[in-house]
Image (tube, rainbow, N blue to C red; front, side, top):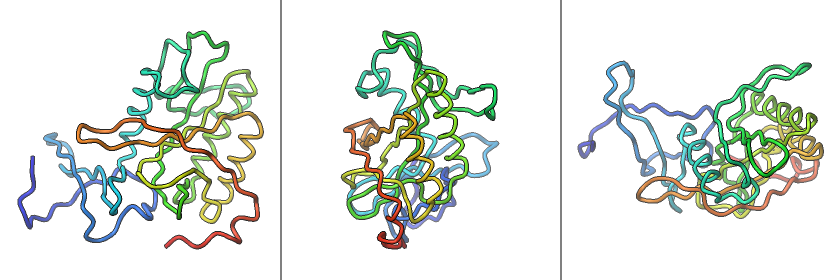
Length: 228
């Protein structure tokens, strides 16, 4: 369905972050339409063009793209498994129960892989960062991944970089230093950190190249410019 030229619509935004650096008045956008009569808003914001290409702001799309890439063997660190399940509850004595996005089992690897996926859109120079707002829930996911590692499984934090710019991933120290601290501690405890670019095509979305992950020193908040 297309929107008539000059028409004004109100669209749902499936994104709980600040959307800093991926939204501005007058930017070209793409919306999806639903015929479900029970929905309050028929239109949903999918992606925004900030000048260099599409930025994917619909966080609900990312996990499916990552899962498809894993089953297709396109993320090397996550090959060697035969079974993939999504939205799986992780329950362990001594830890709060929580849900992680993906678990990989039944493969040539000895350990199952518990994976949490985060949609990354915050651009800061040549870096892409997460989170773009304080994320208490994000820290809980890191704690679950650490618990998985302590039990002998793999814990994987996968940052899905949903925009074309940025040479590497780094935590957003100036926005949520507690999350950045927790991410560094999780990595030190054995949680694996991956950053994968999400490429936008005419047909949809696909996982592309991996980006380096750089965990900055704890002094970085004093050196980082403020992101408007």
